[in-house]
Amino acid sequence: MNKHLELAIMETAKVEALMTAIDDLYMEDAPDQLQYLHMTAMDVIRRVAAELEKLSEDKRVVDVIYAVNDVRNSH
Image 1 (cartoon, rainbow, N blue to C red):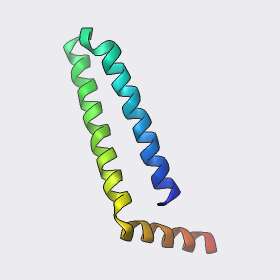
Image 2 (image 1 turned 30 degrees about the horizontal axis):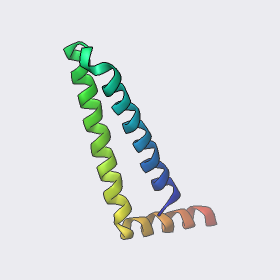
Image 3 (image 1 turned 45 degrees about the vertical axis):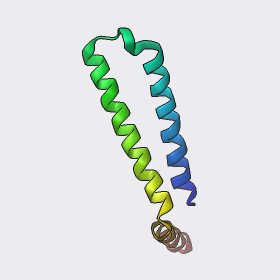
């Protein structure tokens, strides 16, 4: 897997873990608007993580990324 894609997946997982911890610690007593913002952010993080996972599974895309990087590095 491309190292940049792998890094993006890892960083997304870190943010999701952080948001889950915030949820567990603070969201029960938070005002409704803050809870809605938090839920929206969590939804976006989960969708990005799912799309990154799909991208990592698509070998053709990863091959294209490698090819582009090879072209860039050869100049």
